[in-house]
Every structure is written in structure tokens, then in C-alpha cells.
Length: 454
Image (tube, rainbow, N blue to C red):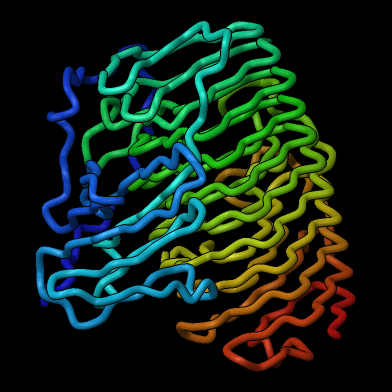
């Protein structure tokens, strides 16, 4: 058994966005492939890609076929787990690995010997047909260097299975945009392996009817998918895998009517963050409303939070946000006082209310469970702080790991008082015990009113 490697702790160094990639990639063979895992599906070997912190494979199901996987692990191991654990995925140990089957596409994580730096992400997806009308077509088996691909109204991007697009995609005031396929949008060309950068991988601004489905976004140097001031956004069956600090998976900024479903996000910062801010564009300082995140799988690595609202809340309202039927397999330890699983950091003026967390399974919470604060932070620019109220937790369970603490804290200064209020806990279970009060949750509560448990 090989011991986990302790990588040096990354540091955030702010960098401006670049107009051109640092380098180009000319063939798939130039991408690093796994030395630890070999994967076959129905007898066909699949490419298994490698980064410093995880390996991943992207099987594509072309028909309603039964899938039989043989996964070889080129190293001895003592323990193997397949997450999310609630699926109780059956597998058969072989001499040098495992066999498992699927009747439909699933997203699974294979861990050996509790080593969080060497998992295999097995991310199956149904094949996406090429639409009849395509304006940007990236073909199977090819590598493309696009720097920044700028989209316009009615554009359709198709990234075919087995293709890799190096660069990033953006649009401004473009409606009815589609970005589809089973291929990869790759961001490692924007940064050194252990450094962040200033570019967002996929960033539509001021668009209506934005549809992103099927693709995988890998190794961006900053935020992954960032809709800003958009309406009617659908993000479905997308994988986002980042490994650098500031590598948020999905940032929803000043948007309305957003659906996120059946996605996998592994982020070394916030998996999902909901904001109102001008960081990327002035139009982002508008209300964020009616966001529904469901049936997703999350891994929050060392930095950031799993499901976050904030810090930047420079708008009037952030409301009607619903996280439903999601699995959080890891929320790793950050140690900077801000990390947590279900978090709201209201560091500006917005009124954050009617936030719903329902049917969420948490397998490993090394940081705080619930971390909700009205505060002044290094990200704040508004002179006043907003309220937080009507936050609902229903059928939430922490199934393993340590017992995490929780914090709810208001804000009081000489001329301002903000006391978060009206928190509802319905069937919240931590390590097998249903919590009925703040003490059961190991919760610190300050300048806060009206906690309800049932």
C-alpha cells in the first residue's frame, strides 16, 4: 500500500485574465494518462486521464445497454470504497482490481485506502446526438486550441465524445445558446499545475435561454461555469473537475430561473456559489432568484465550501434557492474559518431568504456542517449588511466522518444590527442521531433569533 502524498499547500495569488493560452496542445497523447487505473467497459479499454489529485474516465453510453466494467488497480490496496455510499454499489474483487456493472449511466467515485489524492472518478453519461444545426463542431479524436471562443445568439456548440477543446467559451448578450456533447473543455493551458489564473472557463453574460449539457470541464485555473445576469439557464449532466485554489465549480451570479441537475463537481474551492457581484462584469450586481440544484454529486476539496451563498452579495435579494437530493462525499478541512458544507456568508447588503436544503446526504464533513454568518469580510464593498431569514433544512444526514460543529452568527456594529432569524430543522440526523436543539448540533449561535427543530 502506498501512503498518501502530502502536497504543499497552495496559495492564492491574484492574476489578471489572459487573452491567449500559455501553450497549445496538439494531440490527445500529450495529456497525462493514469498509471494507477486501467478501465475496460464491455471489453473495450477506455482512456483514463490523470491529474495530480485525481484520475477520471468518461464512459459514454450509446444505447440502453448493460455496462460491465473491469477496473485494474496497478498497486496493492487493503480497502476500497465506492461513493456515494448510499447507493451501496456492489462490486466483485478480482486479483488486481474490481468488476462492477451498471444498467444505466451512473457517476461513481472509487477510493482506495482512504486516500483522497488518488481517487478514480467513473463518470458515465448517455450519448448526446449531434444536433442538426451546429455552428461550432469539435470532432471526436481531435484536440483544438481556441483561446477564447465567443458565442452569439442562436449558436450551437457540439463537443463530440473523445474530443478535447483547450481554451474557454464566453458570450455577451447572446440568447438561445447551446453548448452540448460528451467531450472535454480543458483549462490547464491557462495556468501552471499548482497555480490559479484569472480566466473563467465558460461564462455567458446577459443571456436568455442558455443550455449547457453533457460536457466535462477539467482543470480550469479559476471559476468553471459562470452565468452572469442570465435568465433561463439549464446545466445538465455536466462534470466540473478543478484542482487549484479559486477553482470554483459553478458560480451563479445575478441570475434568475436556473436549473442544475445530475452534475458532478469536484472543486478545490466552492462547488457551487451563488452571488451578486461585479467581479467579472458590472451586470452581475443584480438579484439571484429561483435556482434549483438537484440530483448532483459534490466533492469539496481543501478550500472553499460545498454549497455556498456569498460572500459577494451586492444586490437586493438572493432568494428561492433550492438544493435537493444531492450527495456530498467530502468537504475537506480548510482551516481558514470559512469552510463548510451548507454555508451562507452574507458579506454585503442582500436580503438572503427562503433557502431550502432537502434530502442531502453528507458522507464526510471535515469542516463546519452549517456555517451561516452576516459579516464584514475582505470581499465586502457595501457599507451595510443584509438580513438572512427563512432557511429550511429537511431530511439532511451526515453519515460518516467526525462530528462537525455549526455556526450561525449575526452582525452588530455601532450603527447597525443584523440578526438572522427563522431557521427550520426537520429530520436532521448526524451520525445516527436526530438533532432536536442547537446543543445536539454542536452549534454556536450568536445574535440570532428563532431556531425551530422537529
